Length: 391
Image 1 (cartoon, rainbow, N blue to C red):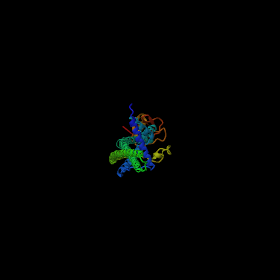
Image 2: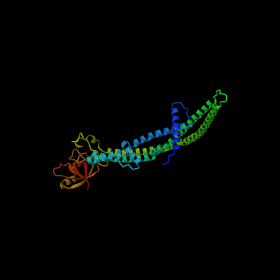
Image 3: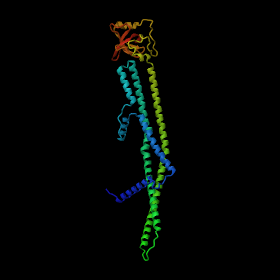
Image 4: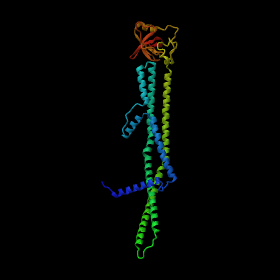
């Protein structure tokens, strides 16, 4: 590998010169070239944009994915350019628990059925949230991240170059000032010389010529560094003026994010409104069933909730109709439609949901007001007054 000693020495000298200039400026021992007000404002605006873009971006990520471990995992997979494994979000996880619990308690029970319905709604909300995350990542977070990792890095690089060119310029100004001061002091030297001894004048003349050459070299160096500084300042200014376009682009992205949120919340509202209507059909006595589990709705003095289109049986007539009498006498089974919800009082009974169809039959020794009901693998006693036999 080739190693250019001269280039290395020049780079080291430049670095040392900049370090000395920077240190003296901080200590107040050297003058500093100030940038024009417009460029200073652009630099401040770029730094402010970067700061707040990072904060908004990070907090949006927290909003869309509250789990910090999941965010770290997604970040690692993104850097590895690999697809992160699919996982249930919070709403979908809750939905799964609710549905599993509802199936465990029995979808035929009031509580089990309500859990299943809530779980299905939470699953739909989870799907809507997944769409929100994907849309926001594409239309909002990605443009913000591209600015931080792309445009701003370019701005920061040019800003650093401008800082270096300014340090070079100020160091050149300092060297020229020192050269002028040294030459002026040498020109003022005036001393009586012995007759015939002109060696001092020869040395003085030589020293003046050397200082003059150094002064000319410093002046040329100043012109070069001034030109480079002006050129870099113009490049930086043109680049930083793009911040206004960046703000306009981020505004469009923000509108897309707001629209995605609006769609998500509208979906959630509609899903929950539908769920509320479904749960609203449940009887209010469910809340007190734990305290009245030993009583049936009739015994507790409260009427059961009746579904739309169903009518309460005529309590003034005989409860056991001719169809039920025939069923009990035949010892066979029939299909029956449930007229309204019934919550089982104990484990020997079967909870019912309005409008569902179950199989019913009689068993020897059963009370005349009850039949055995079957729904899949579930079976239990059901009150005849809650049933309507089907042909």
